[in-house]
Amino acid sequence: ESPKFGEFEVIWLRLPPSVSLHLIQRNPSTRLPEGPYSAASPVKDPQNLPRGHHLAFSVSNFDEFVQFLKEKRIETFEKTQPDGETKQVFFFDPDGNGLEVQSWKA
Image (cartoon, rainbow, N blue to C red):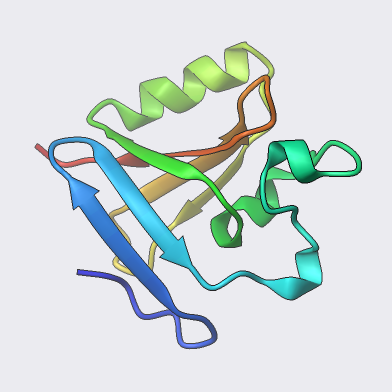
């Protein structure tokens, strides 16, 4: 089941237990590149990732995972889905690939 955001289209595909593929209508105003190697300069703001290319994973220990990222001083963007239950954190790996980790209920 995919959420309905209204202003853009999404399709969420899940490969149990913890990998998701989110197909999201791109936001042209952010000018995110098609991928990390097509960028003219590094893409540094993870706030743009929810509408950009990224790979998503789910974890059962979400809060601990976010704390780990903060301890490593990795820049993140956090949000909660409209259901009020699904938490997400977005960030970039060292090669510039967009990543999302979301909470997962067992």
